[in-house]
Image (cartoon, rainbow, N blue to C red):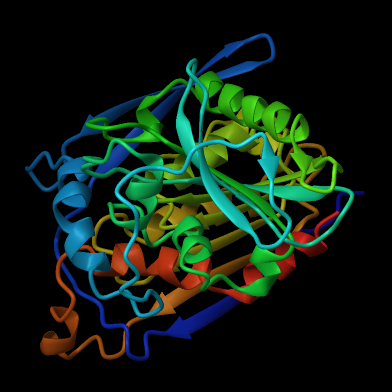
Length: 347
């Protein structure tokens, strides 16, 4: 007897965060190539409304304007250069620093100041951007990706459910590159493995070591990073997903849906997202809920729909500029204490 999936729906009004409406849409389709146990996705752009629109141009041209008025970030001055890796990590406070694997990526890492034998790991996957920063820390604090958890941790504004309980790593695609989405999936997995090995080789100043619970590694993805997160989750190496503005408009391959069964997911998406329509997330949820194969979805999952203040007020809808509703899902999820408490509750 198959277990019926449980899905909780919530809505969050926009309150003081105003949205926009535009006609910008893109469509992506996927083809599955199956080779034994491996999944491979091919993505192509297709024409919609007689116009081919490059979603990366939309994201690159609008993200900076959208995040310039983030409601939860102060005007903290950030260093222009990344912090150096250290062989001994102080316990006096949580530490955020840059780490580089010469074979994959550089990234921003965070270690809590709490004392535990082992920690869950949160992997943050950014979306597309201009990426003009050489430093990963600069990219997540003054660049295109400062709506994500690393920025909150750097500014000491993260919920304690995150800062006290998780080791965090956020790979950065690199200067003048567009997105992690363009990189080989194996390269992202290699970076995570490199980081795990690196952290566990370090010692705290009192001589103790740090350990990552390999059974509790979760993914937090925004935009193209959320599409990447879903693909990575099909490897069955992750115990939970937080997806913000999920952007895959096609139908996931049956094999991918099968491999996602039992992995809890919390989706955030604005009903007025002007880059990736909320139908992308609706379709993902529908695919998971209607899976008819063995091992039907038995994980408790959530779908939070963000509602703009007044859909009939044009002055509100244009207040924050093109792309703001797309970014807003990441703003809400990143600062939500409940999100990290939910991840901690997962088996």
